[in-house]
Length: 288
Image (cartoon, rainbow, N blue to C red; front, side, top):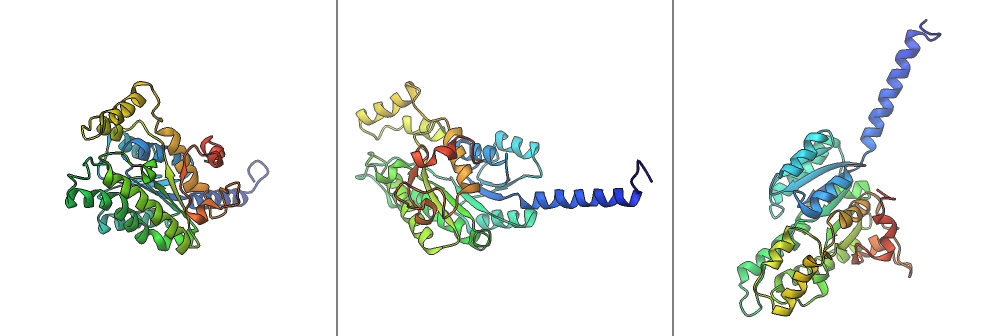
């Protein structure tokens, strides 16, 4: 006896603790994030790591993303690749299953903007934007579907107000975001075990905004409006919409959140802005 407890009983207690720790570790969700190396994607990874594990699929391995992997090596897997390539999407999904045996959600953030007026647009450049912003979404979802169905998981897509806008020189980008919203609605209708959330993250202070401000294809008034958002400090910090994306990936379902009219957002594929009233609780840290 040691301290009134037999060695055998002590060993049994330790075994039970280890089993409980293992069960807790296995219960942690796994989320695949594309475009994870910077901006909204990087902040989404940071938020997610407070509660789950992450596979980051990204063309580049930035120091910031590497730092997260080094700080939490048991919770982060980086797959360097191209979202438009089936093999790279498959590799990311396989990595989640190999390391942790599950894949619960996608946050599809990878995207580009290109500037060409309709009079000058070329098939090659227009198609490239659609390929990165729309076709890659369908590719990632397709390879992840078996795991997502099993998990009754979620697909969170970074969309844009451009889906309903007419901003000059953004024909390809506007079209791509309208298309991805239509895809989200269709996915939500077809896949009854999966919730789907296309989210407008606001006009966010990222590298993409730097590129947009340097564009000379837009009319002067439009350029000034975009420049004024930066100059007046009105751009949205990326960590704010990223918190909503992370919360929806972890807690969003086909029954929550729900609009005032009773519409279940995840079952409908409803396009929402990150700061929509129905998402108030999802952007306060309450649900992540």
